[in-house]
Image (tube, rainbow, N blue to C red):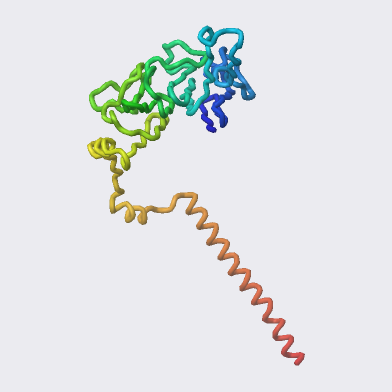
Length: 266
């Protein structure tokens, strides 16, 4: 089971791999064959259909067998949806739109540019899509129309955007076990424990090191004066304490005469 959300639509996969969707239907992102909005979950026919049984009156070789298509992984982009079917093909299905200049798909279709590849993981963000492929050839593929900000991972001096799926050369052959697409960045989780080539690739890759704050930052923070709201709060607290002290003094003054009177009676 899994759930994915785009900007204005949602996609859900049940335990059998059937898909249901609802939300804004623009560009066919719901995969229902139209662009209508849906306020309740609707079954996507391709992933929920049950093939009819074979006709006993027709020879098997003359019958066109309809396979039962079920999803194994799902993802949603801003105006698109993706599904990877299970074994043995691991084909990537797509519907909706990933570039404004392209043609919208209102029904799920196989993503042609990765046909023949075994898609294992997929994620789609605001500006790009990332897919990890396995099988005999391990590939990490990304694409996204302009503007993009380096999240496609093609490297220094290479194109920052691409409307066609392109391989990320720096991670070619890596055993990618998870991918995630953000607003303008992508993340990849690589297996370096059980896969030596992946470990070698990671060791050659540049490392992101977070800059440490300057040592004088703490001292500078101590010298900062309180802001107006903080100062006002301090004044109020001080006034409240002062008021409480005055009330205690008044109460003590009132108690003194009472004590004297009690002494005279004794």
